[in-house]
Length: 137
Image: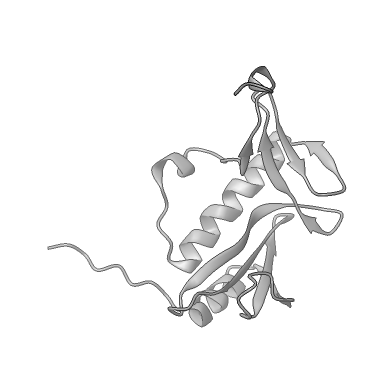
């Protein structure tokens, strides 16, 4: 018989995150839905989460390294991954990627989200930009 997976509600997920040494603080509405968003931080990485309409947890801003107080995006340019904010861009190191990956796995576990095989193998990027195909149609 299939095992029923219990997905925690948003309040339980916040309590679980705080219990796993995540720093949790309220932020302005980042989702555009009027829901109260929370920024969670650990290992120098942060993400914003909010309650979904069904009471579960939704990620408003994907996990990223904190650069200048902003959550960076991970950009893959084929030869190197970069951490990018609107004002700053730096090459991502192995330590950055390891921290983002560990943060993401712990966030999924606390929120009751499924962990996908390809994402569990390593860090995935928000955006892929390859210079060899620039300008192609």
